[in-house]
Image (tube, rainbow, N blue to C red):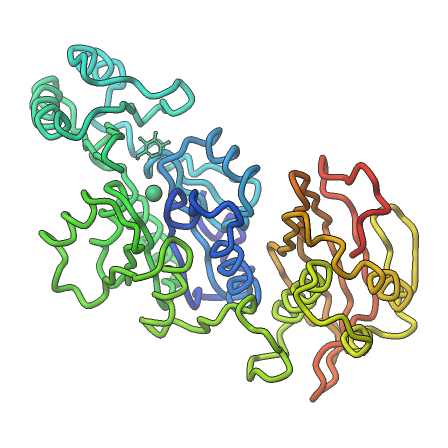
Length: 430
Ligand code: GLC
Ligand code: MG
C-alpha cells in the first residue's frame, strides 16, 4: 500500500501545502473542555482553508477500538492518514486501509511473547486493558517514581534476549514497549520517505503533541513543532534537554487545538483565523471564493441563529436567502423536496430554539469539483450535535459563483449517514 494507491495524492493534486500531524488526547482533544470549543474552531479553519490541498494526520497512542470510541464522543474530523497504537499501525483514508508493509517491517527483532514474559517479572507494571494491547505494542501503567528504573532494567533484559525495543513513558503513567523501528517519529519518517519517492513531500509539516510518546515526532528534520501549553512534564523535560535551541519548535501559550492554531500563525503556515472567530463575515477580508469557506460560513450562521447568538432580524434571514437561488430545491434526507426559500422561512421560526441544548454544527471532508465555467459540485458531511444526540448527512450542493458576490446555492441533496438518521426526521432543518 502506498500513498498514491490510497488515492490521497490525487485528491490534493500534488504536494500538500500543509501536513498537520497531531496527537489526539490532550492535543487535538481537550478533555477539560466539554463544549469542544477549540476543536470546533480548528475544524472550521481546516475545512474552510486547508482540506482541499493539505493533509490531516492523527497520530495517537490509542488502539483502533479506543480511537473509534473517541470519534464517537468528540467532534473529530476524518483524517487523511491515521497512525494508531503509538506509531505501530498506519492506515489510509476514511475506510482506514492498513499499511501492511509498515507492519511487516516492525517484525524485525520483535517477539511479543518474550516481552510479556519479561515484563511479568515486574509486579509494579500493571497491564493496560486488553483493547490497548496490540501486535507491536505492549502497554502498562506504572508510577512515575518507579518508571525510570524499570525502563532501564527492562531494556537490558530484553536486549539480552535478542530483542530491539523502544520503551516510552507518557503522561506520567503509561509505559509502552514497541519494536525499536516503531513509534510516532518513525511512522512519520516513513510517511515522509514515501512522499519523497512520489516526489510529493508536503511543503510544510507541523507536528503537534503534549506527552512523551510525541517527542520523537519533533526530531524529524525540517518539521515545525508545537508543544501545546498543557504539555506534560516528561515532554517539557525532553524539550529542555534535546530541542531547546530549535527555532522550529514552540511551546504554545494556548491549550490543545487552540495551541495548534496558534502555531499555524506563529510559523506563518497559512490562514490562522478560524471562521468561528469571525463575528461579521461581511467585514472581514477572507477568501470568499472557496466552496469550503462558503459551506463552513453558512453552517456557522445557521448554528448562531438557532443558538440566538446573532440578533433576531429580518435582515439576517434576507442576507442568508440572497445566497440561495430562489428557484433552487433542497432534497431533505427524508426525501421531501422543498424550495430553498421555504426552508429558510422555516429556519427563521427556529430562532433561539437551541439555547438550552449543547447545539453545535460542523462539517467534515468538504470536497469540491469545478464542473462548469462558474459551477461547482460540493460534497461534505454535515454533523449536528444537540444535547446527547448527534446526526450526520452526506450532503451534495451545486453552487454557482457570481463575482463579486460569492456563491449561490443552486441545488442541494442530503442523505442520512448510515446509522445516523434522526429519530424525528422533521427536526432536521438543513
Ligand atoms: C494512549 C494509549 C495507551 C498508551 C498511551 C501512551 O493513551 O491508549 O495504550 O499507553 O497512549 O502512549
Ligand atoms: Mg496526548
